Length: 367
Image (cartoon, rainbow, N blue to C red; front, top):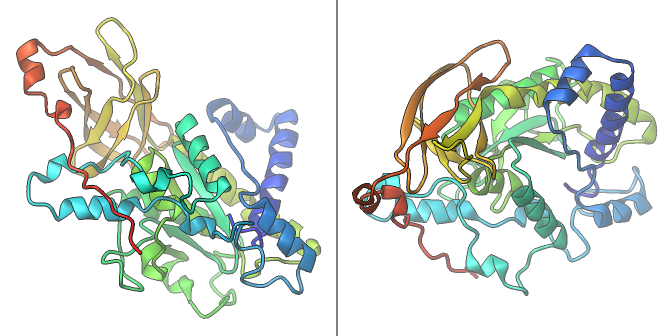
């Protein structure tokens, strides 16, 4: 994400080469991963920042040079602040079930032509809208810890405040998978990077409990898309020497693989009507977890969940909802949970709660 934090950029290039080489050598694990998973890799989100840091090199590149893009934006503070929109809605008296907690629309000010939004941020948001991502990680440098949402504390004026999502258990698992598989991070006697001893938290932390970040990509992904995303601080050094890169790759290789394999953890399926047509934009709600996801254009969906028994409801405007019991196993394979919805009668449609506008307050730009 930041141009001067180059380890993530380099290990993804290593990873691309590794996947291709191992696929050609018919490595069973890589064959399974590639055949069952749509993989998208973005080595550098801020190439302009990288060029600025590269001119100074590993000895002189510091905290700031290359962190910002050419327009001066820190891209990890540049996404729309949807947390405040959701929390403002929760303060309005009324039925809490009508508060939108998924695919929160971007505020109007964020779409203005002169809005302070970097071209890289806009491009990534367009990428998110185009592809129904399920799982993601964005890479940083300067410490060794894995952060999970929310990144923005509530109340927002607090510097550090645990602010979990409704999927806190899943995020903690995803973070622990990466951290415990990272060769350097998992060492109990490793050096502390810059003062924070994350080993006492087993090298994972709620982002808002470290430092509050409004407009982070993690929070935006969770509240605007179906994607679950974490931040990985890969190494103490933001810009190590070239000779250190093979070690950094080995430190992260297993973590990358096992983390990607977690995309198959949970349930998946297709929501169809009685004519076998996929229903786009249907809502998948899990009882007891106050965060819904939506089906993709063909009615298919993927919902990350830890092992256990869940009551899952599929609902769409104009259709009667259907609820199923779905069991997530421990074997690393997703549970197929399909739904067939019946269209509502005219009287049913008049009382359809999904046809009512959900309460999302207007968001004003703050000075």
